[in-house]
Length: 73
Image 1 (spheres, rainbow, N blue to C red):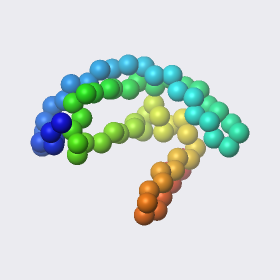
Image 2 (cartoon, helix red, strand yellow):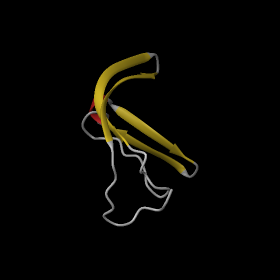
Image 3 (cartoon, rainbow, N blue to C red):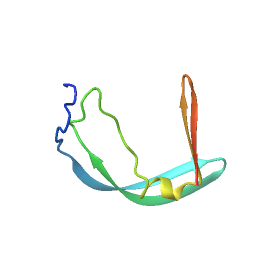
């Protein structure tokens, strides 16, 4: 796998994914469009959408070695 170049185009495959997220004794179920790709380079990253994922959640936390990020609706 190579590093991504500026303005590089990647091939992706659109699918609809049914998700269930369980947190603190509650679960939510929803379907969301998602794109999968075998072309994401080593310095690329995944990106969750504001519409179709985060809009279903009141709070989302990302935990890292140096701290955490909390997104709230």
